Length: 172
Image (cartoon, rainbow, N blue to C red):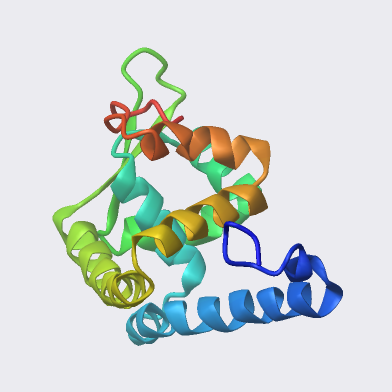
């Protein structure tokens, strides 16, 4: 065994990589199950959840910034955003400096739904983090950062370093 408590690089064998993939698949399935049930009652899905989450995390985010985060087309975002705006969950306002910009924010109704979805997932993560312990949580973060591409790492990097969230409309 080495200093990390692993037997050399056995975790890089194909079977171990496949097991890691399976863990990701099952973990994501179960992590999203609670919110999926809530969203289904409202006629929404995971795409709506992602928009609610990121608009809630970055009030005043522009449509282009959201498109970059979600890595989807403008048309796909439109299909998801329209019912959220029409349903009173998200507001769109014109940019002050550039009137062509659309700035997105959650309404009180949107904040309440996002909070409800977050609470379901927070319980799951908090339990898992408690059971795993601090060093495992740090290892999890390192693995997740390693899976992400450079753009996603850059977006989240400042928060990983413990810096304050960016002002509205400025998404790292």
